[in-house]
Length: 376
Length: 230
View 1 (cartoon, rainbow over the protein chains, first blue to last red):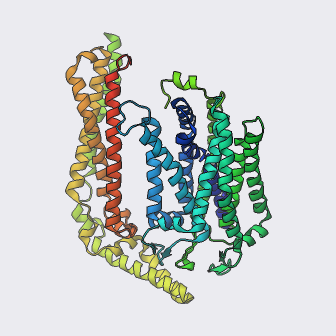
View 2: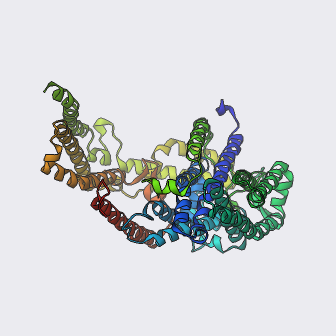
View 3: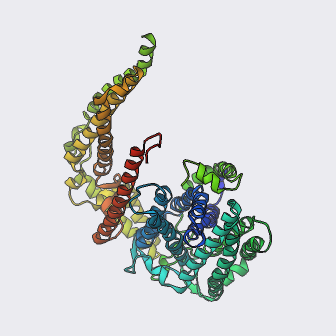
């Protein structure tokens, strides 16, 4: 059934799946954003523990979604995986390390005799939420600004910059994109915590924090959007497969895919609406519109990067080495088989949603944290 | 007494099966030897590695010709190259080897690692059976020697696991994909310095985290299950 679909249709379908998973990951970085609030927003140990325990019940979901994102790219677009992970080596290793120190920090932070001290583990969580997300953003920014690699006739990658990927963080566009994601994560973190925690003094601070962080995110967002619609973009000639620079390519993508434009605008509006809901009304459900808005915005960004004859992993060093969803994809057979497996995903998602509802059925209180022998 | 016997049936079954396992491993070895695989054995129709290398080099050259022809948009030259390639493609990976000995993994390391893994695996089954037996007799708390052996065996578990990885990763050499892609071609072009730096970053970070973990666990053991001591 799925096997009778055109190869190019399956490639587009799998870029859609990758985009959905990647967007869900960005939405779930409320965990990382929340981690950056521990040291600044909490006024005492009880508040700190409330934040850590609220996030601690969710951090694995964010991490597994990141892994799933990488896994989907590996299976559906293996040439991208081989090129980027073997080439932009240091940026991926750096991201990995910020997640290594995150995983243990939740477990070790409050345990007696933990060697490095509570503060160190809180700083680890801060590093994961700032440096980690910044680098993820910079790496995603290269979908538009291009990377420094060359593929030979046998698809073996040669990275042409000595920093092997870390150079991505020194581009103004990528840096802005990364910082936008960092502040967006803080917005989402503050919104999520405000809805998830029952604490009279902390919640108002969380409401203000989401608003302030949105203000901080705006300049970076504006810079990214303005650059995106004005910069030269990478374009593929569908007939020959050759890649060239095209003025206003991403603006052209937006105009020729009105649905993507609608997703982008609706997404950003929903994020603002979510923050306004928490800031200016008594409601604490701002995470819902803001979370959905984040997913829509990111979907638009992924679609801009990969659809409409655009190489999603362009090379600055050698345009012809640029990767598109067509030249980097798995075989028709593999994509077909994976599509059948992907039919099980809704069941996994339903299970996650059910578990999530169980966990968040009641707001987390200081008493619950104190009374739970398994609390972080 | 009867109920004890019934409870012990499963462990004894496991032990009996584990004793069979080494004999299966031995019988698997009585096929073609390394010499047959490397130098060929006309009697049994085994192709030697030197012949595979010769055909592999033809496949590698044909693939290069095919790519050159396609770039030059020379359709007929491309088709000729493709015919040669299809003929020899099963030996593509051998085209990257220099001499027949290159196709042989480090034998003694794989040999001993495999025996350590299987030996320890068999020992663990016996050990678990003993634990089950003592546990069924409610004598586990009194069996100090068994409990000590259990603690030591924790580390034997790590050794068995590492030996298993040696069997897989050393034993597969030189192939990333058997016969098609040698590790020397499949590897990324990271230089040894980069790999070494990464190794030491992980070594340092994981050592620090291991120390933290051990300190936390020792403290928790000291506190005990009741949690009544500081």
